[in-house]
Amino acid sequence: MHDIVIVGGGLVGSSLAIALDGCGFRVALVEAALPKVSEQPSYDERNLALARASINALTALGVWAHTKGQAAPIERIHISRRGEFGAVNLVADELGLPAFGAVLPARELGNALLHRLDACQSLERIAPAQLTAIESTADTIELSVREGERERRLSTRLLVGADGTGSFVRGHFGIGVQRTDYVQSAFVTTLTTEKPLDGRAFERFTDSGPVAMLPCGRHQAGLVLTVPTEDSDRVAALDDTAFIALVHERFGYRLGRLSRPGKRKPYPLARVLADRLTAERMVLVGNAAQTVHPLGAQGFNLGLRDALSLSELLIAARQENSDPGNADLLQRYVERRTPDREATTSFSDDLVRLMGNKSAPLRVLRSLGFVALERLTPLKRRVALRGMGFRGDVSQRALSR
Image (cartoon, rainbow, N blue to C red; front, side, top):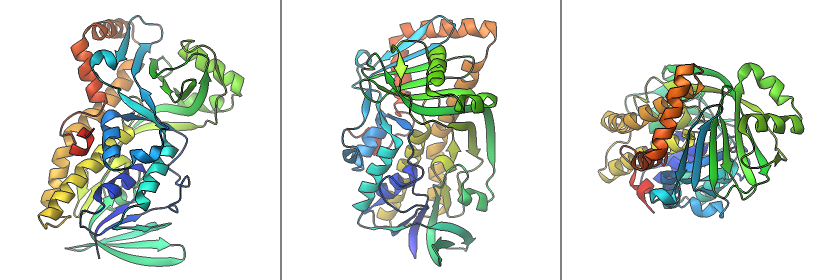
C-alpha cells in the first residue's frame, strides 16, 4: 500500500518525487524508461530557459548541484518584431537583478534529476513500467502496472498524473481538454554564432512565427524557429546551408554569421488545457494539466510550480497525519494553482495571437507599446519578475537563494 503514486518520470514527475522524499509518506514513481542517465525519452536536445524561481527551487531540492555548471545565465533579453519599430531591452543589472534565469539542455536537467533520484531514501522507483488500468474504490485507487512480462498491482491513497500531454491518467478519469492548434511547428536546434552572446537572449517575432535565440555558451545558441505547419516538411528537408539562410532571413545578423546547425525536427505546437485538475484521489501536474506554446519559455517552469505547490500541501498533510488524497487538500491545490495557471496560459496564448496578427493598425500599436515599455523601468521590472516565476502564491523553495 502506497500513500502516493506518481505516474510519469519526466522532468516534472521526477521533481515532485524528489520534493516528497523523506516527508514520511510512502511514495512510488512509475517510470516508462529505465532510470539511467541520458536514457529518458523526454530528456531530449531542447534547451530549457529556466526561470530564476525554478533555479532557486532546483537548488533547494539538491538538483542544481548535479548540473555541473553547464547552465548559461540569461542576463539580457532583447524583444523585437520584424518590420516594426521599437524594441524592448531587459537588462538584469539595470533592474537590480542578478540574472533572469539560465539556459540548460533538457538532457542535462534530466540527468541531474536522475542523479538526485538515486539519493532518495524513501522512494520506490518502478521502471521500466507502463500503467495499464486504474480502478477506484472509496479509500484507494488500484493500479495495474506492467513491468516487462510481469503484471503488478499497486494500491495508493493519491494518484498523481505526471504523464504528459497525452495523459493516460487524465483520460481514464474522463477529463476533457481544451485544445488550440496554433498551426505552427517549432524546429529546435543549436547554432554557432560569430559574435558572442554574453548572456543575451533574443525573442524575434515575424509574420511566419517567432524565433528565439538562447545563450548556451559564449558562441553557442539554442534556437527555436517557428514556421507554419504547412511549411514544416519543406524546412525539415533543407540542408544546413539553406536552413542557416532561412534563420538569417528571419532573425537577421545581430549575432554575426551563424553556422553549424545541429540535428533538428519539427514539433507541432498546440495548447492543451485539462478541463479539471483533480478527480477523486487524483491530481494532474505538468503537461498532463496544461501544455503551452514555447513562446515565453513557461512550460517546464509552470509544471515545476505545480509540483512545488502540491508537495508543500502534501508535506503539511503528513505533519497533520492527514489523508493525502482527501478532497479538501485537492481543492486547496486547485485554488492555489488556478491563478498562476490561468494567467500564464492566457498570457502565452494572447502573446501568440497578438504578435502574430498582421493588421496594419495593430502593427503601429505594437510598436508604440514596445517604445512605451522600453521607457518604463518599473513596468519592465514587473514584467521581468513575472517571467522569473515570482507570481501568485510562490513556493518557499522557489524563494530560496
